[in-house]
Image (cartoon, rainbow, N blue to C red; front, side, top):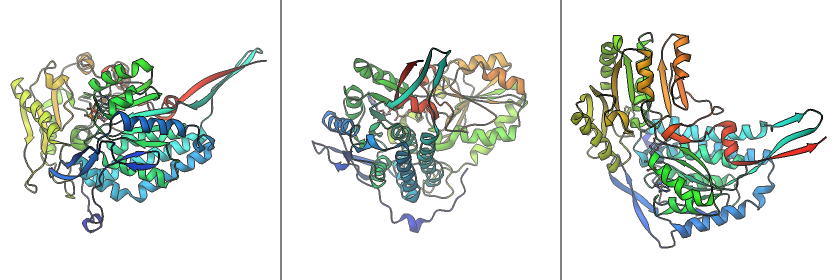
Length: 495
Ligand code: NAD
């Protein structure tokens, strides 16, 4: 998928960083001085340290965020806040090679992917909400000659942001940009596996002039650690979480006693539905991405592929051939289409499912674990295609979150709609067809928050983003993000 040149000389200027907390505008160690080692999954070498925080660091961060709500931050006009967001975006782009180096080293993903997707889109998140903030209006209604109603918007307050490891900076900025646009303040917790770009983002916010206390960062684990402390803290007004569905349940329980507002972007097991009337070459180009982009560690990955039986053999033959052309290699190899999985623990999780597929009666048509010839160590898994599984197999029902897809034939439209909806998840779906009526008809019956027809991963940041069923609570994007990071009050004037 990638074919890039990488300026290795320029990258020699950058080094992995040690990750400290950022509280009230200052980088600090943990109260206990507790640190863990940060690993590069592509080489399995230690690359630095991560401070591990808990209740006391979270409490200080929340108090700083609360104080900041009534400080100079409150008095900034929408134009001034918008300018600040723009400066953060500019600074991200100015440092994009450094950020991409750090992201690729932390996650194992190809450097060129980090540069083009993660870092560029992170800057775009700030530009988008900078514009949105200065162009949005408010809701108002005239009720006959009796009354005029209008809504006013205020910051929701202190927002806890808990993040996963697959798109560390991209997903964090997707939360932080609208939070700042709405005038709220943040306590961020990145994944303990990928803490480095969040640490640089805190530095960037300070350089862009964000007042102390508005953006805070506490590193740590989830349960019994910094993550749980954020979700339980009585002065955190809202929690936005992206991660595993089971963690979402735990966070909802922890947030319930103080009735926090929550927004959850959770797991997915997304169907990729291929009707016989589609253009198979176009389908295969996109299906390679929806299956294996970011080593398949994308919540929206189309990991359940359903193919109409009349084109099943042709599709499979071409798809396998193209998959076998993908290069798995070191993230800094310009020819690498795919890098390493994020950690040894996650590698074992993914391989467990490949072994399970055989026990469930499946055939591994291509893929499995194999170290690329250019590396000596690392958590590499080849793009893997499994056939011969039934709809009820665990490998078809459960999120694997790696470069592993299942391919299943279907006979009729009704049958494939039933298959598509038959999981606990409801995040994304792709439908491939050149029949316009069928595209609409099927889209309206699919239980998913994001439905693509003849494409995948095409996003417009104004549109609602999120999942139904076990894939999430609430929607992000444009006005939806603004509503989450604000409180609305309605004012009624009697005429
Ligand atoms: P995870 O749920 O294990 O961890 C995510 C974050 O939650 C980490 O920062 C972790 O420390 C924290 N955490 C864990 N337990 C916690 C607890 N009890 N209280 C508070 N915080 C806690 O998820 P992950 O493995 O990092 O990420 C992979 C998952 O994320 C996949 O399921 C994937 O589908 C999902 N994801 C969803 C989207 C989306 O937009 N829907 C996007 C990316 C990833």
